[in-house]
Amino acid sequence: MKDTYQRNIDYLRISVTDRCNFRCRYCMPPEETAVLTGRELLNDEEILEIAEAAVSLGIRKFKVTGGEPLIRPGVPELIGNLKRLPGAEQVTLTTNGSLLPDQLEALRANGLDTVNISLDTLDRERFAHLTGQDALLRVLEGIRKAQEAGLRVKINTVLRRDENEEEWHSIALLAKDRPLDVRFIELMPIGAGRGLHGVSGEAVYERLRLRYPDVEPDRGIHGNGPAVYVHIPGWQGSVGFISAVHRKFCAACNRLRLTSDGSLKPCLCYAERIDLKPLLRSSEYAGEDKKEQRRRILRQEIRKAVLLKPAEHCFEEPSGISETRKMWEIGG
Ligand code: SAM
Ligand code: SF4
Image 1: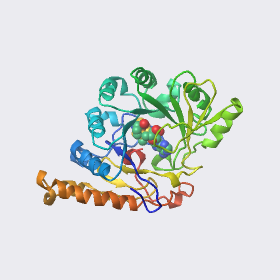
Image 2: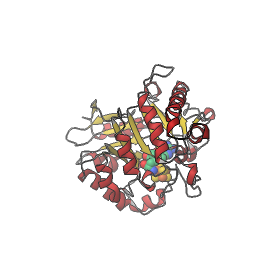
Image 3: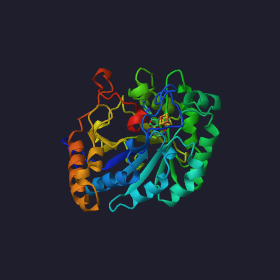
Image 4: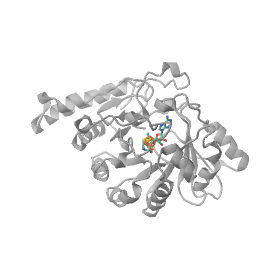
């Protein structure tokens, strides 16, 4: 699917829940809590119906996210069903890793391609402070087991000034002796991230370059996203930078987002969305015999969302950000 700016939209990020067992300060701080209950969430059949319509329009890759996606029962099976949609090429998962050890086997068996695990510190006390959970050891176990299970692993790290900034090197070093990628994601001024101070990808790269002057660009294919990778000779994995704020990559944006309550979001930065739930639940289109009609309208709505994609976000000018929902509500 081409959007107004001739970008090819082939990637759908699906949030399956707004709940989380962590309270990361820049995402869902301790005073916040999930708001959706029961039928406010899409069920698996509804998610698959949207995904199927999306694939018929050229979506090829799915990311399952949240809140914490592994809190929702049946995520491995949902991933298997997404993988089986004719035309779907890749299904990946973003998780805080704490529930991974118990679900790895099922995720692997259902064909998960890659797992992105968020990890902002290697210090146990700081981990508990930043996430509200003393779960560092569990997350490290999740990383180890995911690799043992043969899954491709990427670590996502958000650095914050005066918080975990100096850990950039110890976290990057995870890619030295293991075949995994460490990606530094710039803090975005969305939800609780607004008003906090992140660290630019460029600043981290500069420190990496000073320490490892032989660092080189890594032009290998690492995934669907906007990360720019570098490689240090002798290291097994690579280091990536997702610099959404300081190095806008909107010109190459290829994605739509589906929230767990059934809205399609053209862009993280703006409030525009298309609510698909009324259509999926309308009595006018209920039942198997109306499935084809529903599918036709779903396809129209997905195309509409693609055409609503703006040229670019305005994170550098926060007064222009119209999205008021939080990262955990939208799906990060
Ligand atoms: N709970 C899962 C996890 O933590 O990986 C999936 C959802 S979480 C919202 C997805 C990613 O969004 C995490 O890597 C998290 O660090 C990132 N994130 C959350 N709020 C952010 C913000 N304001 N700016 C940049 N990244 C953010
Ligand atoms: Fe939960 Fe992920 Fe947000 Fe942390 S970043 S609060 S783990 S949804």
